[in-house]
Image 1 (cartoon, rainbow, N blue to C red):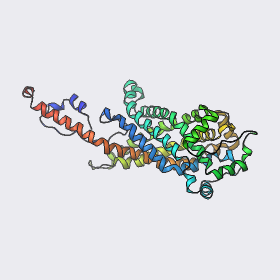
Image 2 (image 1 turned 90 degrees about the horizontal axis):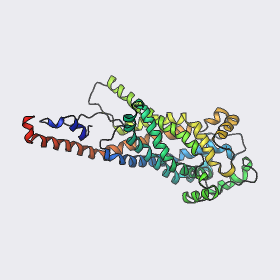
Image 3 (image 1 turned 135 degrees about the vertical axis):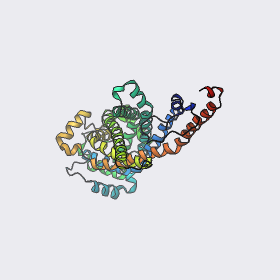
Image 4 (image 1 turned 180 degrees about the horizontal axis):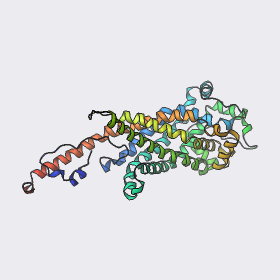
Length: 373
């Protein structure tokens, strides 16, 4: 929908009758109807990110345990998804699937806010200042920048979340430490059991300082920057493909797909494809963040080499199925929530813009200059 400034610039206010701008299918990452509403994109993105994480956290717990089990067990036999689900349920019960949900939701809230907010506020600037980066490259860059800014809050939350996920209950963590300490270096103790988000943060800060809270920061960026950029590109590409299909195969010009439903389907597909392609980076990040002070891996490159040599390509893509299973509904719910919130709460502001154009039109019609126009 055209804004009031666009309508005035195009000269529509000199017309004797006012007709509302024609509704077109909005570009999700296009310019908001009112620049003053950009702050709402941060709010909607934060709510949607936290919502998606909260809904899908149990699957993320299973994925984290599958990716990190090689570090806590001397056995070469790795549990499958179903076996891991049964293990968590048998040892920790339902509570075990929700360990670390507080830092998980907090980190996703920050990332969602910066991701969607920065996309809306910078994409137009990128296209105007660098025309050669228009289109999907502008989406890629804006998404990557937004996710990078959110990582300063997300990474410490992710470290706390993943350590709490692999710990399970206090009884199960103590059993793992007694039985499977063969994978640790001699004389080095694993981190203590975390009772909550605040206690986990204080404990990590006390034992390792800022370095502990930002463990795997580089590997997180190596995973999330391409993931965030790819997800935006895939989403925009799928929307373009959907628009092309509607124009080619649907003759009814009044046909309209609910934006929330479209966000649900296309967001899920975009998140699933992006998550699979970036799984190796996620494996490395998880191993670095859950190892604590044991230092099994000396950095990102050492982890990459070690995993490839000892576990091969299968190790690099370990946990890809639960990761994709997590991201398809999580991304779908996130995009759906953002689309719903934008439609519901920005609709009033858009209606106010239309009314303002109508008022200006009437005023222009009744002005002394109108007769000579």
